[in-house]
Image 1 (cartoon, rainbow, N blue to C red):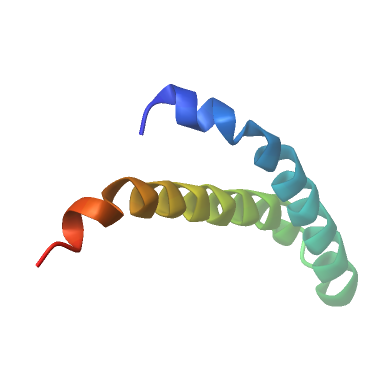
Image 2 (tube, rainbow, N blue to C red):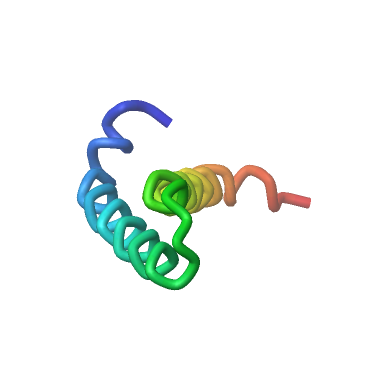
Length: 68
């Protein structure tokens, strides 16, 4: 997975970060834990990146792995 594929999926990064900030704010208002405001956006961004890389990897290697 090169840098071109990462640039192709750049439009997902900011929405994932915004969703993380919103989830952090909701959790902060319920729980009152300041660390969630830091870790929620990072966690959701990492999950989004992991999903994108997994999807790209599966698309690239699906043909070669499933030959019996």
